[in-house]
Image (cartoon, rainbow, N blue to C red; front, side):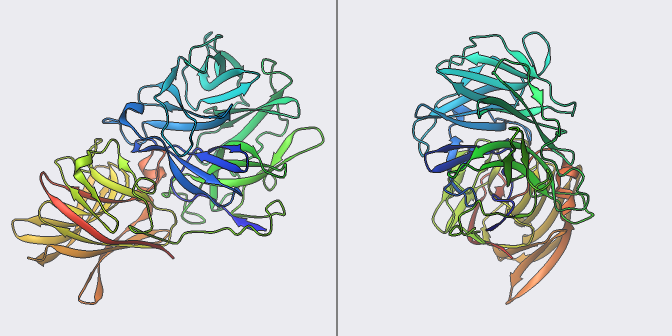
Length: 496
C-alpha cells in the first residue's frame, strides 16, 4: 500500500503516540492556543481523527498575555495501569507538569508539577516505578537529558535529576523518549533545532542507569541534506509498534512552499516513517535515513484506504474540536450555532498578545478557497490568515463615519497597511473570499454574480522564516471594536 505524508496536515507539531489494545492515541503541541494539546486516535496509523484536548480548563494552563509561540510545548502521552498520562511544559512559567485521565474521551486532571527544569518532558514506567526526563541541566549542573524517579501520585522526586546522555553534539538537544525493546533501553532525542537542520538521534544501554552508547550512524532520521525537497525539518519523533510487530516513527516535519523557496507557513505537521530493527538491534528509519512525501509498503494492510477531508464548513466541523481560540476566550463574546457564529468584538485587537474575539481553524494545505458571509453592525469583522500578532493578513468588513467598506490589510512586522478597500455604502454585509496557493493569497469579494479582486500577498511573509516562532497559519474569524457584533455564515474552506 502507498500512503502519503503528512498523515496529519497543518499546525500539529511535536507528535507523541501510545497504543492501547487496538487503538493508537496521539497528542501535539498547542502553544498559546486554547483548548490545549489536541488528542487524535487511529486504528491504522494512517487515518487520524481528533477526539478532544487534554487542557480544557483555565485552571490547567496559564495563557494570559502569553506571546505567540509561548505556552504549551511538546507533550508526551503514555499509558500505564489503565491510566493515560500527558506531560508537557508551560514554557511561559518554565514549569513541567503532567495531567492524567482514566477516560481518554473525558476530562483530564489538574496539573501535577515536577521540580525539574528544561522542556519536552517524557514519562517512562517500569516495575511500578515512574521516571521523568527532560532536556537541560541536572541537579549537579551537567547538561543533557536529565532523568529522575518520581512519585506518580504527587510528582515528588524520589531521586536526584541526573544527566544520562548528552547527545551527539548537535545544538538544542531535546524531545527525549525512553523505550525498552528486546531487553535494551533506547533513548531517542532530537538535535539541530526544529528547523532545516533538525534530526533524530538515539542511544541505547543495558539498564536504565547505564551509560548510553550512541548509534554509530546517527542521525537515524533527517532531511537536512535534501536540498529542494518539499519535506524539511524532520525530527522530534516517537516510536510505536503496530499490531503486527512492525515499528514506526511519528515525527514532525514541514513542507516548504517551493523547490527553491525555503519558507513554510502551514506549520510543523505529523509524518509517519517506517522503522526497521537489524540483527544487531540497532534500528534505521525511512528511506536511507530520510522521510518521504509517500511510502510504498506492505506493512499497511491492503484494505486500509487513506482518507482525506477536503471541505470544511461550520456544519461538518465541531466547535470544540476543530476550532480554537487565542489564549483563554471570553465566553460571552462567542455565540456558536450549527451553521453560523456571532462574535462580539472588544477593544482587544489581533495585534495584541491577549485574547481578541477570534476563533480559528488550521490551514491544512497550500491550495484552497476560503469563503464566508459576514454581516456587521459596527466595528470590524472578517477573515484573518493569522500567524502571530505581528504577522497576519485580514479581509474584513469595517464601518466608519462614511458607511461600510471591505478592506484588505497586511500586517508584516511593524508594517500595518490597508492595501485596498471597496465601498459598500449602506450595505452592512459582504461575501468574502480568499484563494490560497503555495506562494500567494488572493483577496476577493463576491458581488453581483462576480468575484472582485482586491489584491494579493505573498505567503512567505506569514512563514516561520519571516515571523519566527513555532506555529503555523490559522484561518480565523474575528471581530473587534468595543460593543460591536458580527454574524458569520456560509463558511467554507475547500482544498483543491
